[in-house]
Image 1 (cartoon, rainbow, N blue to C red):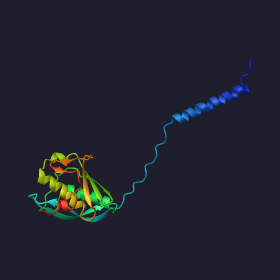
Image 2: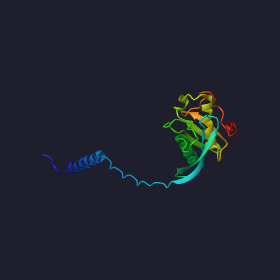
Image 3: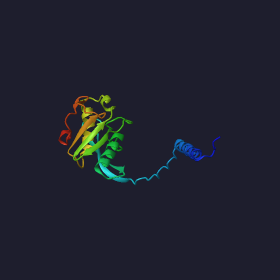
Length: 180
């Protein structure tokens, strides 16, 4: 009869035990990482001029607002101004351009050019030519008040030829939205 504790049997048993231990370690779920501490950035108030329309949808009604931003870069200030535009006027005499609860457009700035992504709800507003002009021009005037050259409009993230009746193929400038 051969020996039970031969060198080969002892080494094989040790390797089998090491493999079983390694298998258990690999099968154990990883430890849940700790969440990083939340650091709130300090918000600062920045004054911006936001444009609305009069009740007859004939002329622009500017309103100076203080918007809260965490960074005072032009893109963040522009997005905050557009959010204030979407929320409607706070002073009397102005009329909101979009109904309450309508989402605010997203704004990007590249050099001197603004890009505004109008949500899918905007073409469904059925405003007619003067209402659509006020929608686009109040946004354009709000964004180009302090800086920028023009505003290009997208609809639901895509290039669009029109917003109802108005042409969106070319960017809007200050001259396109002069007082009527």
